Amino acid sequence: MSERAVTGVRRLGWYLLVAVGVLAFALAVLPGGSGLFPTESLIDRVGNEYFLLGILGGVAVGVLGWMVVRRAREHVTQADPPEPETVRDAPPPGAEFDRLVEGLPTLSAREGSEDAEELRRRLRSTVVATLMREEDLSEERAERWVAEGAWTDDPVATRFLDETASGPPLSERARLLLRGDSWVQHGARAVARALLEQTDAADERGEGSEEA
Image (cartoon, rainbow, N blue to C red; front, side, top):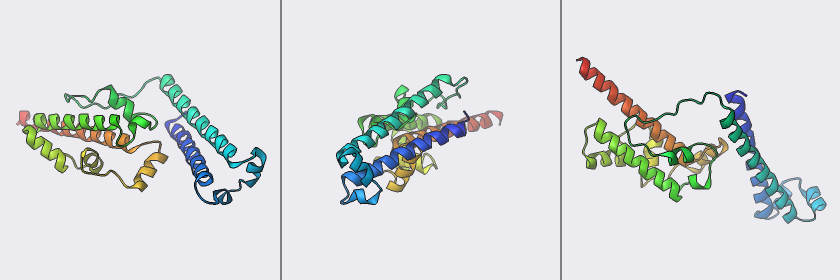
């Protein structure tokens, strides 16, 4: 299956999950929520709204399980996986980075979780170390660059490492969720790309000075 087709199937799965979640929310929370959808006949058949909510929950779990199994099979059957983007000569965040930023959003990848905060701290330390080496900065100045967002032009990477930022607006979070992504994963990948650009630029400057 082509990459575009895989993306389409994955997106369809997320749309189904969102639709089931909205319907369940309307039935459980909103006053008269069952009137918003043609569910009267279903409720009559199953007995009451609680049974219908249980069925919807089972459908959601089934769809999520199908998506997880399908993704696992894709990783197993992929013949030639692409080379992962790494930050050359920079202290790597470790395997925890790969676990959190790849695949379906997990509870450990949610904003404010212990795993997410640890990942952010490690990425921030990696950026500081890279700036100290590539830009010949003191640790204090490198940390100030990161705090002020002066180390990259990428607003996503800057916002992700900003300790005072509240993260993206709800509209952007919803857009990421529909893509099967999360703010933590999206921001961490942006930092990794910005780091790679930083080291590439430093390498080019070094090669230019040697030729001169």
